[in-house]
Image (cartoon, rainbow, N blue to C red; front, side, top):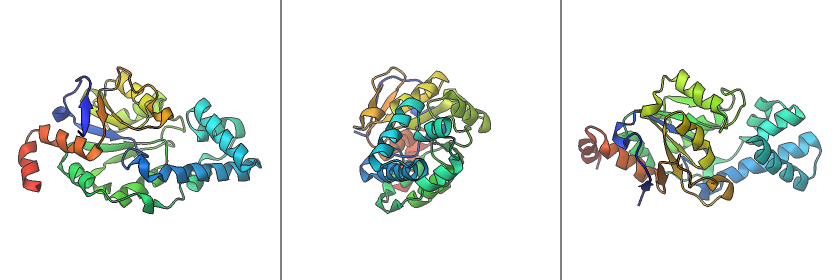
Length: 240
């Protein structure tokens, strides 16, 4: 089964704006791409703060827990340049991310605007969308720099997204792999969908009332939503 609905807010067929996290959401966590990002973070901390690899990895994890992102901790405590950091940590090999024709097809069938909301950079998002063949489907990216480096789940980036793209939250749905990052979306009136995964830090709060859908297969979830939209059955038949 592609997804489970816990409770209904905005019906899937009535969603006008689709908001997606990037890492471990638009591609499977199992391909381990984010492991590369974490290794680059550790390498950056080693070089800039003159720490051992073990010490740098521990600091990376501590900053993530205490500040929401490692970057935020490095900015607050160590006054590092966030643009330099993001360029360094996102200099990674995307070849481990497999093609997903079913996901591309589902995005092609789904009506409505699609926007990325990420704690990464615009450049990282653009590279991944190009690699996945999804760039034509997306109309906007709200990254960590646009949110003035105040990471999800801080409300700042969510409010900026709604304002910048004139989004009605009552007709918007957000998909995320980190459950707690859906709390602000729900608070602002959005429907939420959690990409189910086994990472302890991502699954924390996954049983909360603010999560409306549990998604196991993003392509299947979006294809099912497309069929519920006006004209969806006809579109699905035409593309089958």
